[in-house]
Length: 320
Image (tube, rainbow, N blue to C red; front, side):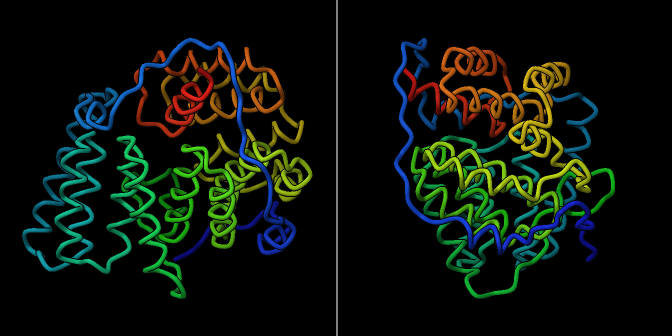
C-alpha cells in the first residue's frame, strides 16, 4: 500500500534516535490553580460522549450494523471482531467497546491489535494502568515482527491510511506514560515510535509528544534536535495540528496566531491538540498562569475524549 511522500523530511528518524540520549528528571510544578474535581474511570465509562450531528450518528450506526453482520458471518476472524469494537467506540459506547475487546482477547489471546485498541479505550476512560498493561503486551506480541498498515475507521481526504500497528502501540504507550507523569518511560516509548514513524504524518505526531517530553525532562538541546527535520514543505495529510505546533516550537509560527486559529476551529479534535500544545509550551517556559488559562478553557468544554483535553486534565490535577 502506497505511503505518503517524504517531502520536506531530510533527516532520517534513525539519526534522531541515535542523537537522543536517555536521562533526565521528572517534570514537576506547584501552583495555586483552581481545583479539578477528581473523577474515577466509572464516571467516564458512564459519561455521555461528545455530541455529533444526527447525520454522522446515523452513518456510524450503519457502520456498526455492518461490522456486526461481518462478525456474525466470520466469528473466527479477529479482524471482524476488532471492527465491532472500533465502531462501538466511535459512537462513544466505550464500556461496550472495552467489554467487546475483552471477550475477543479471550478468543484471540495473541492478537496484538486487540490489546492496542482496548489500551486506547482504557486511555479514553482514564484507566491508565490497564492501558499500560495492554499496550506493553501489544508491544511484546509485535516484537521482531514486520510492521503493518492499520486501516482507517474514518478515512482522510486522500483515503490513504497514515498509521501502522506498531506506531499506534508505541504512540499510545508513550501517551499514557506522559499522562501519568512517567516521563522517562514516555521518552523510551516515543523513541521506539520514532523508529516506525516512516511517513510525514507519523513523524510529526511522534515528534510533537517527544519534543514535549524532552522539554519536561529539562533536555532542551535534545528537544531542538527533534525539530530539525520539521519544515513547512512536509506533505501532511491529517496531522496538520501537530505539524503547526512543531513549527511554532521552531519559531516559524506565532503562538498567538495559532491559538486564534484553534479557537476558530471550535470543537475539532485538532484544535484541542493545538490548545494543549500551546498551554504546555507556556508551562515549561515558566508562564504558568497562561498555561492554566488555556487548560481551564479546554476543560470547560465537552470534548473530554480528545488527547489534548485528557492531557490538560492530567496537568491541572498536578498543578493543584
